[in-house]
Image (cartoon, rainbow, N blue to C red):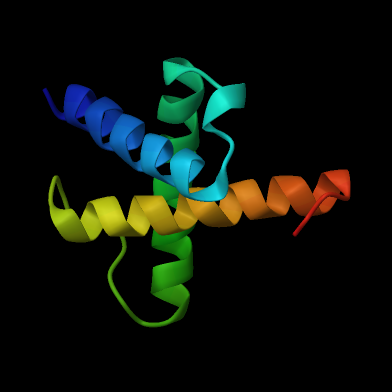
Length: 85
C-alpha cells in the first residue's frame, strides 16, 4: 500500500509541476509519476539542506516538497539542454 501511495503522490506532484512549468504536453502519466517520485527525492534533499524535514508521508507538505523537487528537476533539465527561461 505504501508503494501505491508513493505512485499517487508522485503522479500528482509530477503533474502539477509539469503544468506549472509548461511541459505537460510533452509527457504522459508515466512521465509525471517518474518526475514526481524523483522530485520527491530531490525535494527532500533540498529541504534537508535548509534544515526542514523532507517527505514525511502522504500529506500536503510532502506533496509540496515533491512538487518543489519536480520543478527543480524540470528547470535543471532545461538548463542542461540550453533552453532555461
